Amino acid sequence: MLATRKRTATKKKVVLLVEDEPDIAEVLRMTLEKEGFRMDWCASGEQALERVRQGGVDIVLLDILLPGVDGHEVCRRIRKDVATADIPVIMLTSLTDETDLVVGLDMGADDYISKPFSNKELLARIRAALRRTGRSTVAPRRVIRAGALEIDADRYGVRVAGKSVHLTLAEFRLLYYLARHPGRAFGRAELLPHVVGEGVYVLDRNIDVHIRNIRMKLGEAANYIVTVRGIGYRFEVEAD
Ligand code: CA
Image (cartoon, rainbow, N blue to C red; front, side):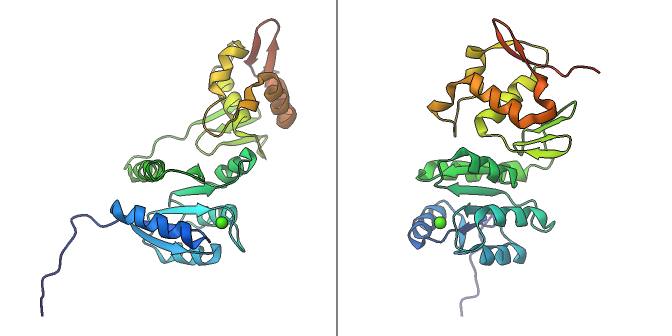
């Protein structure tokens, strides 16, 4: 019997795909294995939760629309369990509604990628997520606290007086940009480039509409966004 066994220099990273469509799973398996990953596949959320608890999963690719427990809920449970909380999760979404996207990020997903995506893009996102978690020193969370408002840029989370507020991606970017530069007035044209980007559509170019929606959602923190007549807006927390 041949006793020599080939040893790979580095252990293969295990990508857990949670996806109910076998065709997609098949294609992804070929892509991932070609790039030196090992792919495990679960077709349901329940199966996936069981699989991550067993350990050895380096990253989860998670479809949102699944039979039974959906992707958002699977993500939430992965984050809730201390044993699995640190596993990076990338959401695969065919949903075009950015609200769902923000919900996903709010549930603790590290990233999202919209179907149809290219293999190249997916692999880049996987590697980036693995790099982030592989760092020995964890980068400080980018959190802004101002008055009753808390903005967590890493989780796309916004809270007012401790209560979670759901902003769209465009609204989030706008608020975050303003809050990072308190006291400074910005024109609409200046703000626009900080709002548009991936996941934000052409329709989202109206800054005033976003500001109105943000204020509505912020409740008691609404007046932190101050209208500067003839210019645009600035972020300021009034001292009582
Ligand atoms: Ca699906």
